[in-house]
Image (tube, rainbow, N blue to C red; front, side, top):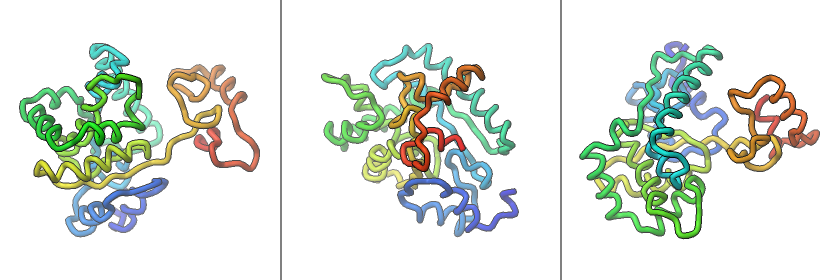
Length: 245
């Protein structure tokens, strides 16, 4: 499929359904001028090389919500599920690669780069960058400040052209755009999906089982959640059911 597409068609497919793109000229340069695959998530059908980061250390740092041993099992589960889902909808996965964060984030070079970033990023900017992603609590630990620095630095150590995520990642993407050049690394493009609303209306929440449909939910549980869903007629904004259509 990708071989038969023009560069413009590939860019259109990559940008489909996105809410925002930072540095779109980087994507155009890679696909149109350099004529090579673009390394970002979820665009396998456009012929992109895709690296999915299984962020085990990130998960551990986010307010220490889970021990590192449990997070590693979750990473393996996500790898299996994502692969199965893509195969189920006939998405080619020959250019798909999974990378476990701890496979490179514990290296000497990565650690030194974190130190270098921490010397040019203020506490205020690190906290601001992670405000929509890292759990905010009073008297927060330093791990919440390290998290956005790592996500910015991952772009360089994964060797990608762009990073893809939800629009809630925007502040981290903006931080990466600003600070990576300060330590000698190039800017990347950033592509953002709109946030999927919860079934109960408003933001989907991991702590509210009725706001989402889990992959392991039984058909009976799915039907029950759909019946309880917030889905007013002729109203698209904040309608969780519409995101499944």
